[in-house]
Length: 394
Ligand code: FAD
Ligand code: DHB
Image: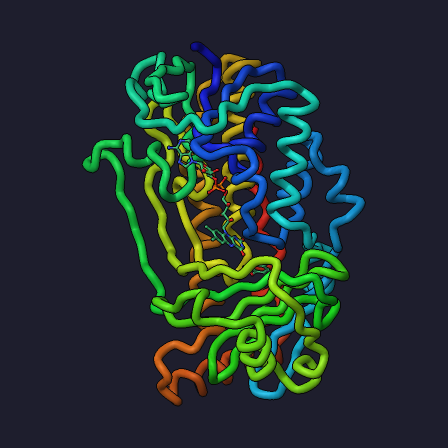
């Protein structure tokens, strides 16, 4: 089998890239190790920056988001008994974020790409390795129905997430990695109950971090900091709701409506960056190249900004025979990645119970008091949260 751009992974990064290239008449084949139902059912992120929302529109998959997504013009930060609102438009020249689940985005991209445009995604076809990425005809070796096959490409996009094989196909002396694992996790619940408040609440409590988010006016998403080795089996629905209430200021706690779980899961927290993101004709994008702790809601949005740069570089190659943007991809994508890695690390450190040391907590409270009491502090938080601008890339 042969294609122009072979894409490994049909998460948001792979699907978005395939859509943007298809609009320019560039052929792709996506190889995905899981089934379509499994990929469609994964519950993950929920906050979309404007840059990503614009890319989804460009990809022809933004219509339902624009109809059903919730526009949020601020977030709330809770500490001690205080609740402070950060106003985004005021501090960022009018920017806002969109609340729209990754599950819905994946659904919309699949519908546009597979059901409407009849483009090719091979599910249950795990890639095993990438060969010849330093030649003009890189190949993806993959498995399908128990047989080993080969996809020959002009370029390979490794969009196969943190545990994928694209990054692992690179010899160790050609790649540098940076990583940290945080000593706690997040326990998340999804439930068909109305949200506590119209906008998200990020709470620093001495018992640990809590986040009140949502998917709609009738579906809530909550997270609480948990032990790194905690298990979902340790938590009844009632225990979750009780612990969430304890960590919120009274005016928010009173408004928690408990309900049965649609889903409950534990997420570990990591920072990870691979450098560079380009190896000859193999490009890494999204979680395949970097991971952030979820506190700043940046993981999904970084996958989109990588695809912004990569799609433009590939389009310039096919339309104008230019290779300069392919050469600049890794540096441009990584500049934005590192800023989000820094923000996510800082925001995580500000909001979580770190070591139980009273001095650490007093320093956090003092920093939040400073941030919310200063226009400059509020601007720092707002402009990072809504998403730093994409670099001009043409
Ligand atoms: P993925 O979505 O991971 O997609 C990669 C795809 O590649 C998958 O479909 C996988 O099955 C496939 N694949 C893997 N290996 C192979 C192979 N060998 N061959 C073929 N296919 C392969 N971000 C936030 O901003 N907020 C959150 O609340 C949040 N919660 C998260 C919770 C969890 C449990 C996880 C894992 C991530 C979470 N994230 C969150 C991060 C966000 O979901 C990711 O950053 C985003 O999914 C990245 O998209 P991606 O397309 O790069 O990778
Ligand atoms: C959600 C997840 C996040 O990590 C975050 O910072 C905000 C919202 C969510 O799943 O809704």
